[in-house]
Image (cartoon, rainbow, N blue to C red; front, side):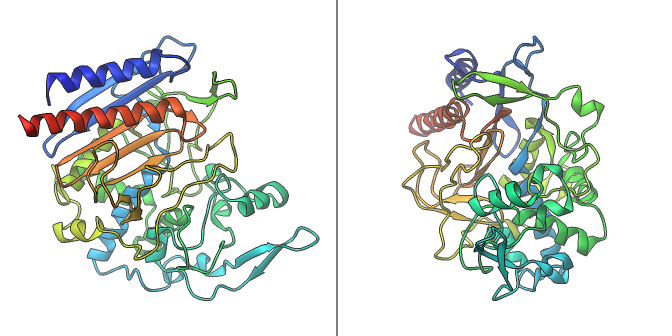
Length: 397
């Protein structure tokens, strides 16, 4: 990559940390098919402390976990062990116990009815299974507030035993679907999700710093979580996911480093191949990157719990679809990301993209709540835009 891009990227990271009410610290990287072409870190791991953010810092990566769980499911499809159009209860029986919530009665009790059809793993992979999150959905928030529905950050089985918000397959709504994909993977393999990842994804890719179970090694390099206050200031939070989770939450439960995640992105850029072995077949990757939603579209995410998420949408006004298991921008994005590229995000303002057409991907990591933080997201958009500006200049030269 050009010296100009490195200089621009370094400046963006530093400005995001130092300008106004920015971020305490950030790590960002870009890779091509062969290796990282940019690695940067700026700021500190925790506001008010002097430990510098470094490129090997650990993060709670939240929903950027999802694509790894989706990859494990794709492996089982390849193996002939997972029929994604069979009822998911075949593999995860508890999902068959869930009913649809049709609002609340006069006494405030949830009105429940049987779903019109079974949830399938295909629906779960596409977020059409009927599940949501309490920070994006009023009915789930009411279940949490009035009926004690546990938060997903408890990493408990009870947290995903929620009613369906609609009949499976009838609409797109972002939620705990991929946690249930993790349950499907466990049901088929007879192993915990983290074991499956370690054997079938992390080892072939050389991912040595990614885990569901935080330990002292991870903790020693951990970037601290922060809350963005109403006045724009930041308050450090004492936040950790459970160190011994009851459930390995396939939707959000991993800790990782940006460098490790770049190894995962490179596998997708390389048609499923890793340095220590193949993770997916090329034909699987080419199938999985395509829009699988049909005529349904990805919609904006309403911030229902303001301490956890602002209203959020990537590239408002542009058509967006869903693949196995990424968002697809159907049109070229304002950053320069081409139509058909893949990407998604994590709740604490972590963002990535995978551009298989040009052979590049990037990841931007902070630890700030609520989601769609202006300072972090603006920095990320500037970072991605600077990359494509540099790429286009190089193509034109």
